[in-house]
Amino acid sequence: MKPFTPKLTPWGPPVLLGIPLDHNSSFLRGAAQAPPLIRQAFHSDAWNKTTETHVDLGAPGMFEDAGDLPAMETPDAFARIEDAIGKLAEAGKRPVSLGGDHSVTAPILRAIAKRTPAITLVHFDAHPDLYADYEGNPHSHASPFARILEEQLVSRLIQIGVRTLNAHQHEQAEKYGVKIFEIKDLPDPTHLNLTGPIYVSFDIDALDPAFAPGVSHWEPGGLTTREAISYLHALPGPIIGADIVEFNPVHDPTGLTATVAAKILKELLGRMLAG
Ligand SMILES: [Mn+2]
Image (cartoon, rainbow, N blue to C red; front, side, top):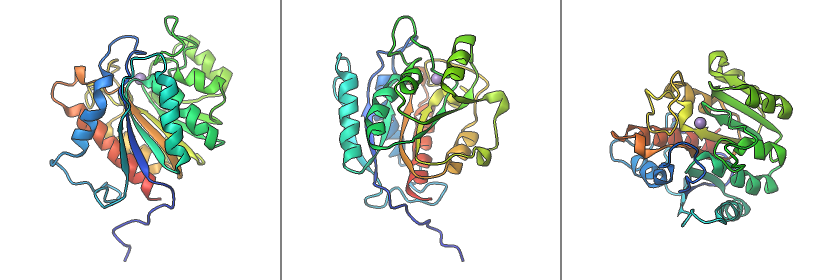
């Protein structure tokens, strides 16, 4: 009989790191309030801590929590993010960052790419976030993947769930060889043909706002929570790090989106730990 509990990977522990930064948001602030609310939903007594893949995240030593970075409203915020992520990676741990707006992914990957070559970056989002700059801000939450690609921090970028591709971002995608799976052309999760090491960047607005209204940019017609989880479960290992970004509590009066973000976190941790 197949054992209920899957075999754990030999990779270092995932470590949560909250990054309460939203000053690179172009439309609506509020994402800086997200990290403690995702944690609170994650630790809620409303559910148990066993993932759908049968990993008990409540067992001792499964993951760590490094808390939140302080005072992100300063000019050196990106340098401090890079430094904090670098220290975790240096210690053999796998950073799982809780945003914050999407701009944080650039400094995170600067730190991780120094230690891990040939990363495949798997990016879930309604938006390609490939603007050369947005409204004059090269650090905008609409531009992190342009920075990541021009600095050659990853060897491949795959985007899933995009439904806002315009001519400029299409040009950028062609220039950098980005593989975009627009929402209208979603592949079967088991047919992505990816090879590790994988880094996952998950923008909550990849999901349809019917499932996750707590985001700054509502873009109807998105992924179901089920579809997103199926993609996470199908990713090959090792997953060397991840971020969950753009949850905006200002648009989340019922608290449902916090729970959806926590569910994505839960299944992502399960996937990182086994298989
Ligand atoms: Mn987005």
